[in-house]
Image (tube, rainbow, N blue to C red):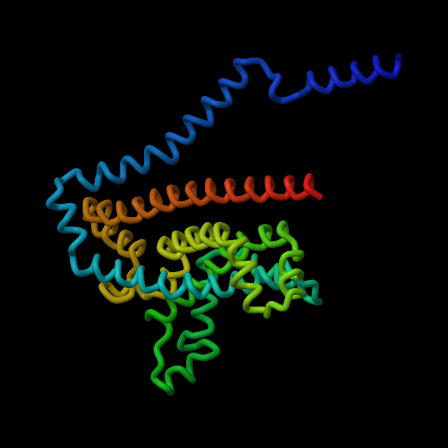
Length: 302
């Protein structure tokens, strides 16, 4: 009897320390602070971008978007993303497969290399490319002899973007693959499936929503990358300027309406990214719930 009494007293004591049992005014104060921060730091700047973009009328807005330099920046941004994102998808799937499905010597080193772009400033990443491909760099002499232009051209922009966006797909897939385990793949191989068949028929359907999630984030970062691209692009107007660099040039020239008009494209990209991100999260939660229900039903049947 005394043991039950002590247990009940301990439970009441622990419940009294529960964070959700704070006074009502504390909870509402914290919610208000979070809401004000959200409005002032996220929603308000987004609204101001569109307000400034249309400040001088729709005509000025449309003229800024159809300007040849803007169209060139859009094309270069799309080209960079079209090259960087698929390459990162291939690397991300391969790296996640290796880390999550196999145990091998150097696994921790591979994981560290995947995380490296998160710990290195984009500007430093751009400077590393300058040291490699620049005139005084390791490969600069050889590139000049063979008339190959990497720095201050599209190749350097693509390489810098790939380096910055490498972790997004892999880091999204590794926890997902580790949680799923290797039982389904092992069962497919036992039943006679090849490696490719196992990947296409078993692994890919299980990771498709996580893969889409990683692609969305990778694409958004590739189109919005500024630091590394700014270092290696050379800021050649109409040739090596992506959208973020074009916005900087317009703002420095005091053409604020045009700068905010182009910025609205990046803002729209952010909004679309958030919508797609939320949609993928909902679909992934539904799939996880279905998998959990199927596992429970199989356990009850057995």
